[in-house]
Image (tube, rainbow, N blue to C red; front, side, top):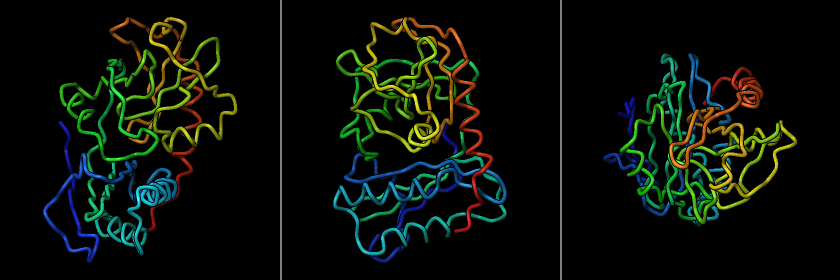
Length: 257
C-alpha cells in the first residue's frame, strides 16, 4: 500500500489550493523524482523539470510563468528539517498543478516481471493516461513485481521504468514505442554501447539479464519472468550499471529551492 506524506493541488490561474486531484487520465503531463536525505537532494532535478516543461509545450499546456510556479509550489511543500526517501510527483493539466510525496518502496531482492499485452497512450511522452496500468499495478505487490508492457510480441518498457536486456555481454534496449526516462538518458551518456533492438517475447531465453532503470526504482535486476518462463543467468551488467547510477546519486547536489 502506498504511504503518502503529502498530497496537494493548486489552481494554475492563481495557485489557490483546492481539494487534491491526482489528475490521472486527464490531458496533461507528470514527472516523478526521487528526493532523499537531509538536507534534501532530488536526483536529476533540473532534467525532470525541463523535460516536464518541454512536454507541456508539446501538449499546448505551457503558459506564462508555469515553470516558475511549479518551482514555487515544490519549494512550498518541501521541508528543510525532513529526512526524505520519497518520490516527488508533479502533475499538470490545463487547470491544476498537483504535488505529492509518497514513501519510496523498499524492493525485494527477488524481483519479477509480469508481461501484459498493453501499451501506454502516446508512449513517447510522460502523459497522464495511466489508469489501465494503475489498475493492473493495484493487483500486485509492487515491492517484488512490475508489469512488462508488450505489443505485437515486443517488450517495450515496464509500468514504471525502462528495460535493458543483456546478451553475450552486450546491453540492448527497445527501439521505439516507449517513454525514454531521465535515468535511461543519463545512462546512455555514460554507456556508449547500448544497442537498439526489438526485444521479442519468444526470444527471451537469449538474454542473460533483464534490468529495470527509472526514477522510482533506480536500478533493479529482474530475477525471473513467469510466462514465458525466464530466469536470470548473471548479475555482471547489473553491477556495472549500478556503479554508474550510484555515482550520480553520490554527486547529486542539495536541493536549494
